[in-house]
Image 1 (tube, rainbow, N blue to C red):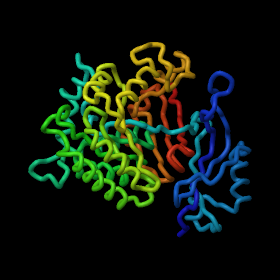
Image 2: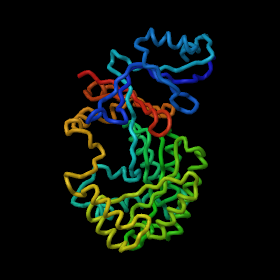
Image 3: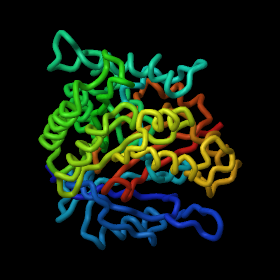
Image 4: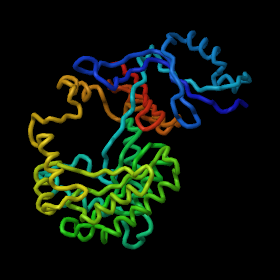
Length: 391
């Protein structure tokens, strides 16, 4: 039998967006060639953009002393075996960057699509806090409830199927369920930052859903951090991120405790939160915070709101500010839905495959079909492949 492949070689057309705009807007970079990824650590080891044909690929492999893993199984031998993923020109396939979700609430997946007359703060009371509180069990507090298994598996499956190879997750206040989310991401192969939500302020948090105290918030964070470091000591796939929900839900003591907890590690742990999501939130922060200068001081929140011209169509900050409206519309038109994601790799590992029984639906779809591949550190070398279906 042949040895396990040393590299996965992705061969075909690569389309990506340069880090810096050319002139006044970004222009896609389109290249044809091969890129190879280590099957040991998932890091990109090199690329060759001179390879323009199957014959050139064969010559390249021969020059490197590499042989296809499928050939090695039939008796051929070589110092290095590789697995080849071919984006086929006759099917209009190409490789492109996968997706990174920098802010996602995993337990809120069941609420997707809900809408009513509520805005942020009333939404929390009516939908969010009741949903998130269901991820803990009063009968068996040391175990995550079955509901948590179902929702978190569904969340990870859905994000992977959409091509999200890295996500920064907000979980709930519950230690067992948050540890479960980390374990599931690690098992399924999705890169993730996992945060247990800290919220101890009785003036804002409901009695049925809050930490007992600031000290309790920090102590429970420690349990989650220890679990994540135990299952992934190097943070290759999952890592902890401290998560004070936002200023009104946390006492000043809790926020200072989180800051000290982050600094206790080398390098310091990441921290994520919310800020200036609407005018009511800013007003609430000013009311509950007074003039205190805490970790998330009121003046900082208000200044941020002014910076982004909150509520204005002429905001000074736009995440996709270089795009025209036409470009934004094109994204929505051509992105398609999760039925069109065929396969997803992370760190050289196949973590998602679209089920075969979906083939009939695929044939009837005129949307895009993706193959998504993530390799390397966080956003370093994240690639996928797309095949546009024929109408």
